[in-house]
Length: 186
Image (cartoon, rainbow, N blue to C red; front, side):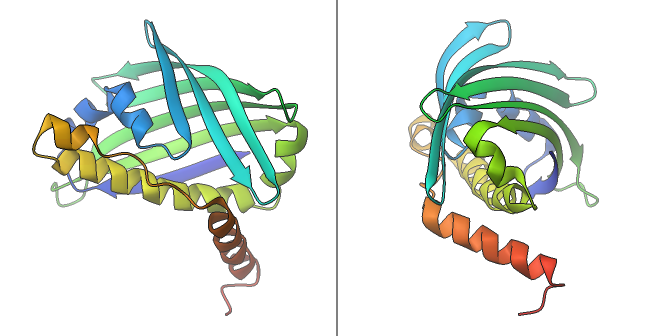
């Protein structure tokens, strides 16, 4: 399944690029993510916990991160397994940073190719995962903005992704998907 997102961060490109190079800080802004170790050379071990309606999964896995500072682009290649639910996931994410049209901020473009197998795969159908990713991206951006606006190292360390209520996230995403399906009618 392909997911394409674009969002703006109200900070200069170089500031956002520097932030994106601090993987532990970025991981703190990903709802449900936990960075377990920096294995060196752009390799990381982590965990992502998700709850979709009656299904919950905790994917333990690894990711490799490569970047191109000249082009301000990056690639995240990750995979994980939920041993309890027998689901597996793999993701390839490419991102690119560019100045906004007025030059005051940064446009971040994200293209993800997500593969799910097992019980988690049933939620990849019909666009529900895309709607949920829209909402999670919003949480991510809010956290990034908070960290970038922090005035001290201590203040920045206290900022993490908001706790996402999985039930309300699921139903809000489902409602948005249904509205799209029927042409936005209320």
